Image 1 (cartoon, rainbow, N blue to C red):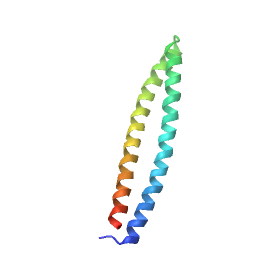
Image 2 (image 1 turned 60 degrees about the horizontal axis):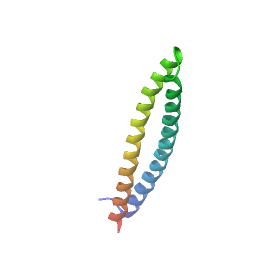
Image 3 (image 1 turned 45 degrees about the horizontal axis):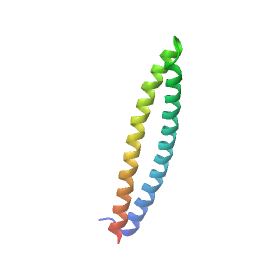
Image 4 (image 1 turned 90 degrees about the vertical axis):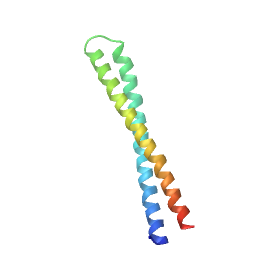
Length: 89
């Protein structure tokens, strides 16, 4: 069994990791949005720009999936920190 200090230290470390993941989520959101704009622009053109649009769609979908995974990880991480802090009390 962990001591109270160890649990608090673990909660602090997890909160720090959650804030880093929050920044990842923000960057993934910006990247996904930018790729979608690029995809719409590329799909309305012909030639090489059309191919760029298709590639942008694929990358935007991948970024969106990663965004969802990071968001789910953040939600589960917050629940875990809450459980840690509840076990201290």
